Length: 246
Image 1 (cartoon, helix red, strand yellow):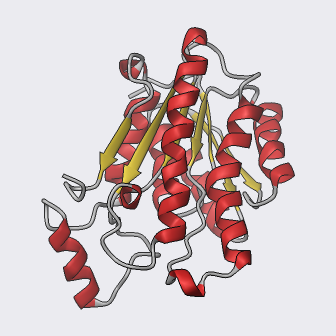
Image 2 (cartoon, rainbow, N blue to C red; image 1 turned 45 degrees about the vertical axis):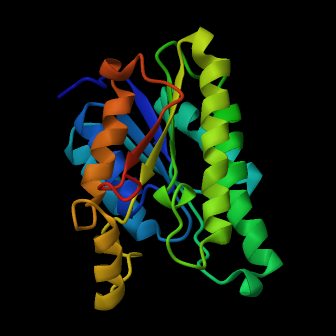
């Protein structure tokens, strides 16, 4: 249960949904965990309290991932407050689901800033602090491989970029003993998930398991990649999508 004892993690967008589940899964394995949040300090503080209840140190950092200064400062604050950084989980994401003709330049700019630029800048800021055995884990999406509904052009494009980033990081950082991997969730039961019964049924039909994932099921894969057991896994994309892309 203490595979990550003495390790420190930063999970962007860690105050709710998949990010919160990842933060708690890492803490359950012994890691101290910092999370970023955009607006909801109450939700972030609640996750920090749960991290502490698990016996780890927790830290909430207000940071809009669309702001390049905020994301690099979040890395610096993690190191200054918790003393180290061993695991970076780039989870924060912007999601604009709209037909191509209706996408605004503002939506395009924000999605690319949060989903593409922020993971790169966070990795860059983390690099001086990562020791041998360090981990960079990017959270992608199965719609980068299979966009089965119209309206995913922007989001799918942004998440596809993480494949190239992850592979390049794995190649560049491998000699330093640092791994980089991509976890691509499928439909997951969060507060952002669709609730229309017909739409939910249609999505379920695309999976092999016939259901949405829980955030904890995604978090379990991320937590494994952070442990020493995954030290020879790098440059990989793990589709955690119930067979959606099978």
